[in-house]
Image (cartoon, rainbow, N blue to C red; front, top):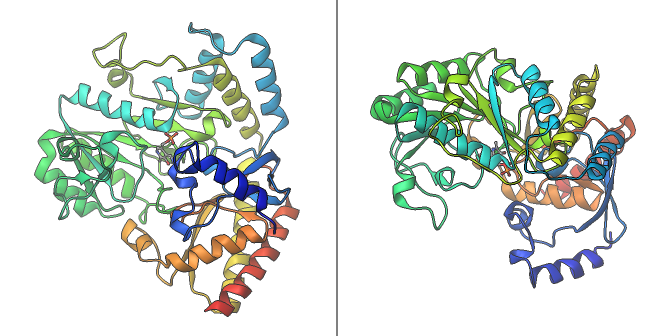
Length: 433
Ligand code: PMP
């Protein structure tokens, strides 16, 4: 595969864009280096790079592109919106309709607000939770990612349930100390943290199905109920970060899958149909903390912009079509079967976590149910896997902590081509081992 043009463009990028990328996850640092592929065009399940190479896309832009590229319904919505003007700075009918549709899908969203990213959505839920409870601390879970606001760039402290430490330069110790990080899928650690800090915990924040150390579901059906109950026992709120999970596995939230009701939600990615978006919402009495009704401030020049609203509406319209989610899950299951069979044939140890149309392939024998288990999987093997897949026209995220996303527009033929590519990749991986 010739990547000469990608090299040239990336070289140019490095001279003007810091690190050559607009988000660090796009660099190939965690897969042993290499030049990121520079894309030129996308259509359906595929995209095409600046050298003219074709890739089947399982990156899905880290989640949002559940309808693939240039979906006609989305494109039509964008063109129509552009014709009507894309930004007013006033209320519009579109934001009302879109909010109504989101609430129809997730009835817990008694009141909601649109923002522009998942980062903003999570950041604001924390402010609202603090405003409502009058408390300061937040408990989150190890390995979960909640965007790049200061409080969310905090790592676990020296022991379980100790105060956090900055996970990024520029985050103050004071901010980090307000955030406690406990392991996912372990109620007793959460219980300990709440016992220690409970009176000052504003919120327990969790990805109900984790998407940020690979796809990891609650190990027990009742885990999330346990998380919510423990939070409530101590007078804290429970916030679900559903930026990845909302409308991912079915037409609604991950909370609905487990029949639970968090107090607040953060949303993003899929709901924008590929345009920048975030949203947060939940219980009316809590949301009434937010200005102009309440004392907690949140605003946004671009918030609820007609372009994102109309694209979001179009995306939900397609997702509502019967059978959409079943088809994605079936295709993903088929692909996973092929991956497991190829790995077995070549004697390469893998473990796969699949939830609906999303899955992560970890290199290692052990099941992955928490962050430490994900860390323990083989990074070097994943790096080879990633590069070999790309060389065979299959693009996934350059990180062992991400997922493959099967979209609504992957065809059976795409899946079969991917299975064949995977077989070739494992043949090479088997030889290297
Ligand atoms: N929460 C979760 C669970 C996420 O996965 C992400 C992004 N990957 C975010 C929040 C932040 O969203 P954004 O990149 O839109 O700011």
